Image 1 (tube, one colour):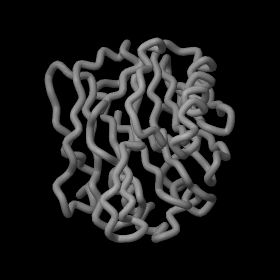
Image 2: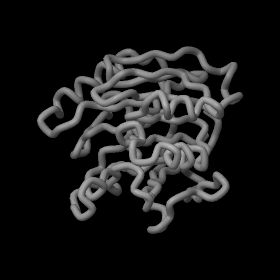
Image 3: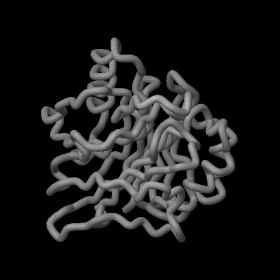
Image 4: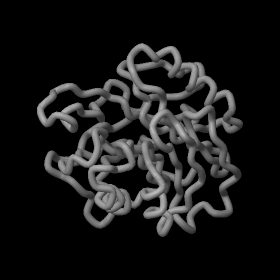
Length: 236
């Protein structure tokens, strides 16, 4: 099961058609998207079923699943306090979130995560999205693991000015430790790669791991955020 998380920046305003093309090229089973608008949603609904949206501090946060997949296994969908939207497949809750920005709001972001998790009724959780956090946080009290802790940055200020070297690791996956995570992979696609040919994701793998993780490095400057991918290697 392949899960894509991507903050596409202000409804994909730079080039929404290319944003949609990249998303469809990746061909993930579940999409967790931030800063989407009705144009992006309408363009994706030919290929994906939208399971819900929530209005956050910037446009919409949405979650989709590939058409015809998981149809009879989806239990319900729900939103959380203008910060996240999620749905349940079997006994796993998948959540797309966009937490409040700015460094002085860290305590509020922790509160948002607390409120999200307290309303989850499954033991297994996958949370994806733009967390807007500059530092690592420990969610062990919820049995959640940051799959790329200490890994590569996913937000790049040079998108705005073409020269800034400022980078942050804002985009993250948190996964329940009950999914038996062995270790994560944070290797980026080769520099200059701006698409994934034929929907094939060259994820690294390990026989002892339950998932793999990748950051897609786009040189098309479609967004200030890189897409991130989580591949759970079995159908949970």
